[in-house]
Length: 303
Image (cartoon, rainbow, N blue to C red; front, side):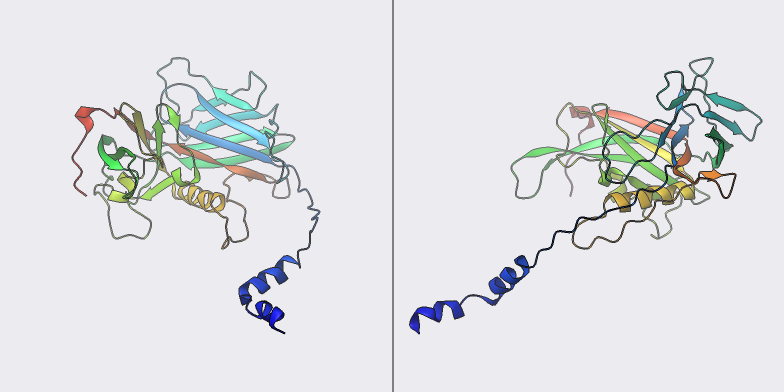
């Protein structure tokens, strides 16, 4: 009997693990492919120069190839001042572009409301968005930091300064660029209400809170001589909700993931029984500032 005593001393969790591993079943799921829909990627700004709207068609969920372009659409944008802007796809690639007659002309103007009109495959889609105000980016500073308290690797942490505009609830999106490259991981979708997090105490008219000011940093921090650009974009409440939900869905994974849901859209088919569309139409005023990680922009570490 002594030769069997080891068996009884095997930890219970190992026996459980063996039992679980022996019960694996491979499921070959057959997923239905939904109807092809128009996908709209449209963010128009008050910055001078061309404006672009990208139209594609949706593809199957597990299809990782580039979505096919939606061609031969008629795309226009009109504002509440009576102006209409035509967007054309001259390269036949799904990128519909408005070209100003003068390079310094702007399509977007703060305070105006814009309507997007798309005629595509016998369907007509519309969306409306107001171009709201936005504050300036006053400055960007840098502090020399360790990558983490136990690391010997050092870099530079950026902090930008901007003050919320007083008198109303404002919504913004923050974007940042490192040496000309937009940082676009899920964690880099940065939105803020009045320069703070949604539901925080009243911050109307105050300086953006510290976590927002320091949100413009890559995981590896910056290197000396890097060029950093920070943009603040105005949003409507609907666009703010869109970006928050998009980040939630992109980050939805791991042990406690929830079932994925459709991200909201403001693209509406004028025919209620017609094919639906996905995507979002956003109008934003944009203010930005660029700074180099250089001696004149360094500040002492006071944390």
